[in-house]
Image (cartoon, rainbow, N blue to C red; front, side):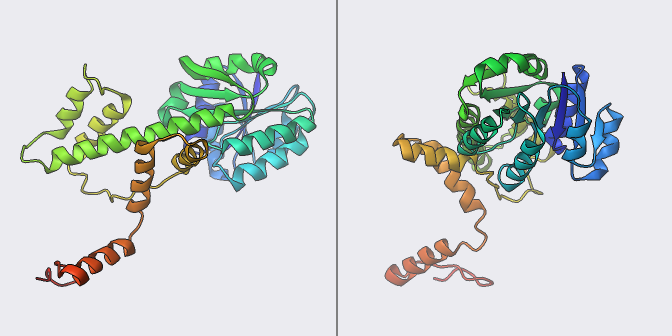
Length: 304
């Protein structure tokens, strides 16, 4: 089975290595030409653009996109679709919005091209050594490419989820759950950090991850990061948001399903990125106005 892989970022490059190790012929393309030597070192056939790559492929073409959600994926999808023929396959392994995936499925179908939306979990390590994937698209055609998913995922680590959009919808909810779990870990360790007890937080994470109810890969990662810097002194408390949590929250509101933990975790991320803190300034000023409460001014001690 020959695969055309577009997008050799951290996830894409590791997936390339995984595919090559599993014996697949991989054609690869990325606009960052500095990645050519790395791809070729691992046995991939690198092309400077998607057009050249698709042209070089023989037989039924399977094109795997590993790109950021939004305009980048849209542009590459549109371009690749024009190059493919009836029976060919496009796999989107990025974090696209499920509604975009449904639309792309319908557009590809008009040309007889099969489109699969694949939610990918497991991070860079998973992409290299075995991921977890959630796959939406045509069930009959999925049987043709199932050996590919069986090969690049851990045992029991892939699921055909049904019709178009279902793979990326499931991954969206997965990421919403992930937001909530990370938020709980962060809050708990913050409380331990500020308590009167001198906990070794690396060892706390280790014991939590051995036999406790909350043991998990996230706890394992917590132990690892605390072993490098217990106070996280070199890290800014800014939590970027990829959008998946927001999408999860939007769908919950639309369906009138309560997801308070996920909602709060999304709000915390937004708050962390607010460097100006204008809202907090308004609140501090209001407390000072109506009650004479202390208020901090830049460069000055607290007001009395």
